[in-house]
Length: 179
Length: 308
Image (cartoon, rainbow over all chains, first blue to last red; front, side):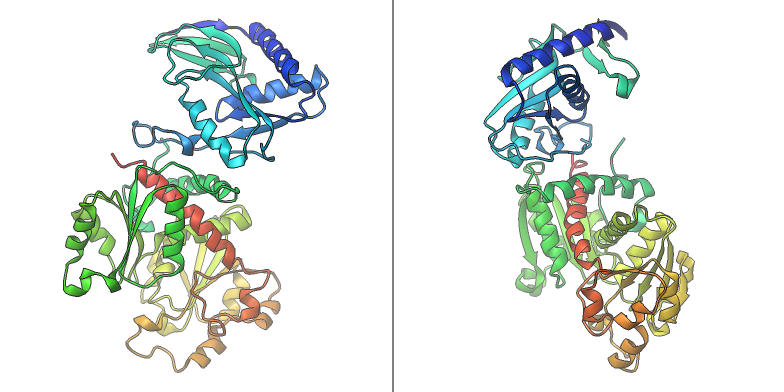
């Protein structure tokens, strides 16, 4: 099993600032925008972006929520793994809001499909966009594409993209792991 | 890995501490779900569940049915009173007939202790015991412990007294198993005739003076007198029982601390508990009912994930 570095901490930082600027360009003051981190791994990226927007770009208030999609997945009872739930933290309704889903890796698109269903429990958003740090091309099962992407990666199915965050894993780094 | 150690929920006796923690953790998520304006998730849309009740029930049956529906399972209900059981069909035949209609899980209440265990050995479905005679009522004990945890942050180290008809109560036995497993101290209190012999072997202590028991405890779980299971007289009169073992406001106010009052229902107001106590701020009876749905969703979800 080998692994190589896809993105270093410095590269991740540059990408995060670029993504924050792209969000700013489309959402301006974020008054009717909600950033939704997809549990479990999307929340770190969402928190990071919200922090950058507030501290570096002086956006006053960013509505930030965490959405758990476990109970909305389409593979219940189909894998060997038991799906473990994470907590949903949504302190607002998304009715008429511009929602941005935030996740670390876009792979088959099934998580996002589940998130599209899950978000309906919190109202009818005006629009939904998707932001991912890593977009794994050529491996989609569904017609889902990101609006904002950090880095596009051509990884084969046996490979795995591992995104690590300083607050959870000790450092910011992205690996491509081959079995 | 985060899965239950069992394929059926037949009793708390068969669970370990980790199972209970996993059920509680999962119930936290479902509690958040059922407090949304849209209370439904599509998780169990592939699963069909039969609720088979050979004994009367209001809360448990409604609670299971709501839990199943909020998980999007298909539900069929069956009560013995209006069925072929009256025509002489055996339990295994009845259940196997239901299962051949492609049912994945069975939630069963039965007057005979061990009915769930018996069934789990003979039919191919995941069985959830919703009460088997005076034996066990695992989901009730889970929701009771969950409610205590919600109130105090932890069940371990808490003093819990179970008051009333311990002899005929499946809630008492399941609660004793669940509370002991989580490290609580348990006392039972009631007339000597309604306390089983050798109950100390389960690690509980016996107290026949209600006031002393209440002074000791953090939580009092009040049980109903199960007249339907009594074929002889266990105490002189209901009035006398109430005088000795009924909780009223005066008694509660005479204690030097605020204890928490629980009751699994159905309440016989004015017998084991007066209305002003049942409806007081110290009572968490209605929280228990709310938590019941979340706990049952967690149990069904975790068991359904094990169906292959």
